[in-house]
Image (cartoon, rainbow, N blue to C red; front, side, top):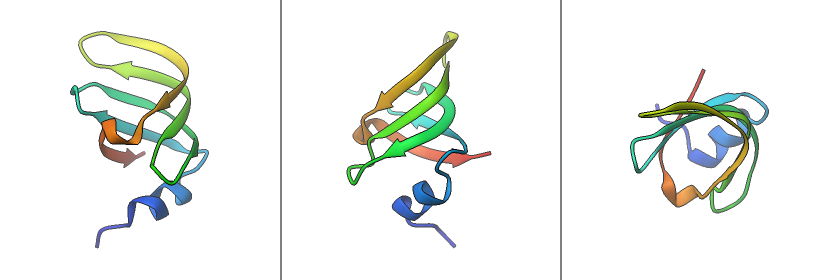
Length: 71
């Protein structure tokens, strides 16, 4: 059974999530906040793509997110 996106974000606030972005990069970090447009703030974020690097705090526009997974 699928979970509604906003409910899933609420349940995983302050937990580790992985975001797959439209450009095939993935970000892993702690979900620190979100809004009604599914814009998200991640703490301790790391980018996993062609280059793997630590980013820290990042704000992601919800329209750039393809998939959200939890650990």
